[in-house]
View 1 (cartoon, rainbow, N blue to C red):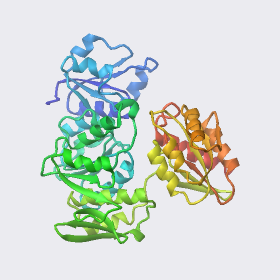
View 2 (view 1 turned 30 degrees about the vertical axis):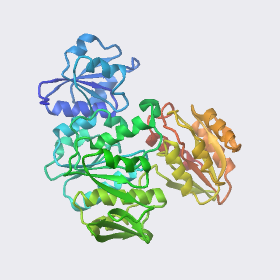
View 3 (view 1 turned 45 degrees about the horizontal axis):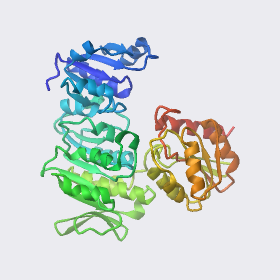
View 4 (view 1 turned 90 degrees about the vertical axis):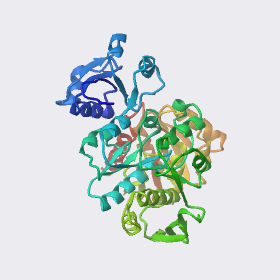
Length: 452
């Protein structure tokens, strides 16, 4: 779609909505920026926009406003199947997301990564590998930098690493990555997608415009992603931590290798990695596959992979105070991700859990405690639900607190020298914090305050 002089409705005044508005300004579109929160002030929204121009509407949205629009851009937190989006689709007005908008004006080749867990670590590693080989590289998407912020800076020779959430995949139309990846599928966001099957189908949309000339990297060890090989037009490349594949990316005798056409290419050794845990080894395997098929030589991939130390908020060591080690795993926003956090702990652990309820069961997470969790400190909307699941699993060392600060202070009192405190909530941060990054930063601030 030619965007110049079009009237584009942007829903949401967060980071995605502001980024979309600024990009639309740059391509000479007319923008209506909308937010349904009546408590917002237009002046505050305009402050976020800076020099960008938009007609700002807060609260009620009239039919007349909808009818004069040529396109609707949704922020990821707004469902493509909800009442707001339906007002546009009913009038045959296209509904896009921020990713689709950025794709429409960008250049270069995209490596797009999705999955339930490991997206951020894998995307960050892919980005570092691409930066080591290509002059023009951007790391964008759900990792914290809106694609719209950099779309106009891309060139034909640009390589883009994009972390794409299921919410963002709901609104793609022409989005076409050169290499896509689905890392794994476990229950998450069922409050939005309804069923695990719907959630998986949304994830697979990352490949819907790919052809046999493109590549999709899939986890052979995950039954749902392995099955996706039968439902894509792209060339399938599997990765596996558990199976020595004849073709694909795998871990063989503690060596990461690429097997292709009867040849085996060595990338790096397990002993040289700084990333710990089986889940991170899977992330490395995926990153190897993604970047190799983006054209990066194996020796470059191996050099970067062995120097990569991980990302903030994912089993991040904070400090040791009074002999107690504190870890920030705020990125553990669902039970499966939080299981990885527990598995990485080497000592008795006091665990902080709880937050926004996305409709998940917590029993599998609790069963994974495996004797490591000394006490479970619960906070947020899901506290009672998790406590009930814990009791039904035979785990009774729980306490519910009222505030996040109280949770940290309780952990500090419970943990003894040689033990650990882990924030790995198994829940989203919404309702207490705007996102998991803020939750993690507050946790680190509270831990640092314990020194006093």
